[in-house]
Amino acid sequence: MERVDFNANGEARKILTVTNLSKNYGDRCILRGVSLSLSAGERVALVGPSGCGKTTLLNCLGGVDRPDAGRIVLGDAEITGLSSDELAGLRRERIGTIFQFFHLLPTLTAFENVELPLQLLNVPLPERRQRVTHLLERVNLLPRAHALPGRLSGGEMQRVAIARALANRPALLLADEPTGNLDSANGENILNLLAGISDESRVALLMVTHSAEAARVCHRVLHLRDGAFVDATRTT
Image (cartoon, rainbow, N blue to C red):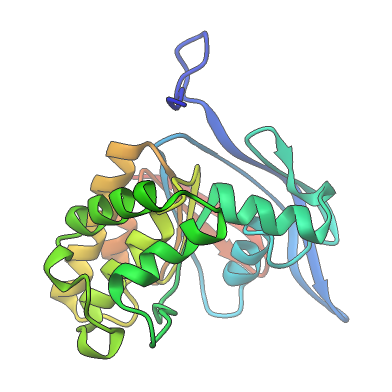
């Protein structure tokens, strides 16, 4: 089905709405009443000092962790009201995640790593092959399709990870320091790739980063400190 990115008023379709999200670990308050929203095709950088709650927020949005209070709505689904099995299904179908350390399976080739999410969704073999081939072409890695991760450079592994995160055609892409383990040249290539893909596919991107260069490819920058937003900056 073709994705509809604008409502009847010509406004960008809301992908994610977060309202008054709070999370505690024991006596420690990690998130304090956090609210945000993302629209189709929008890129938002989440910045702040280590330990301020960035990764916890990403985990809550991805359904990996559960908040103690507040609401998370992804499209028409309220994440905070789903069972564990329903959350797992929603992650497989609607969310893509890119990690700083790639998290590729070392015994699978680049092609097989990208294909894995589609196998979990029971996508038929011909469509799997078509999607994976297209994605590897898009990240300029089709000639390396049969290479194991151990034979790939850091930049190549991150490009495989991006292709894998996009395999299920997610509405929301979560990236946790996607350039943090790369040199400056590879980091710039990855940022340009993410910006181009979000423009083309209209996927909403929320990126945790310490990098000013990464923040510059985003439309907005949200500043998190002590578990709460303290500032927001529009870059475009």
